[in-house]
Amino acid sequence: MPDRTEHFDPVCPSQIAPIRVGDKWTALILTLLASGPMRFNDLRAAISPVTGKVLSVALRGLERDGFITRTEHRDPVRTVSYGITGLGRTLLPAIEMARAWAEEHLAAVLDAQDSYDAANRSTKTG
Image (cartoon, rainbow, N blue to C red; front, side, top):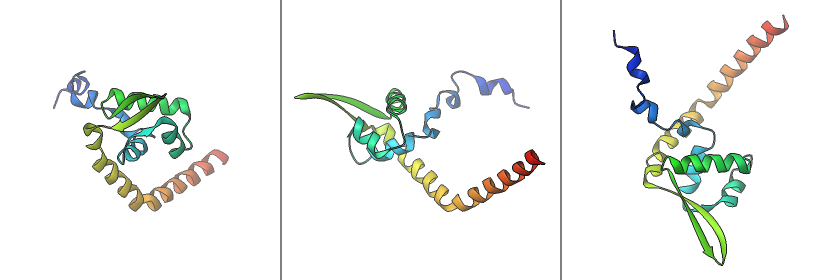
């Protein structure tokens, strides 16, 4: 039997792989940036339910992981734009696969959620 502690090695690739890829905003941000750099307010407008604070945190994390770049422009007014990196582009096929899977299986997931909710609603009220 394999030693289970090897899965918790701090330098194990699964421990340092960015979990951020599965968060709520990463796929949207990277997909938007795939067509070219965008300013913060343009990103925020395109992802309307996101708050400025949440978007800032997501962008900082993506920059830290090397998926996007942040560029300051000082002509004549200071502006900041974000662009996708080569590393970030390597995630686009996986994002597209996840999107296609979700589209294909959406009805089944919604049915499963409805069934679960109905079963749990009846146990809580009964």
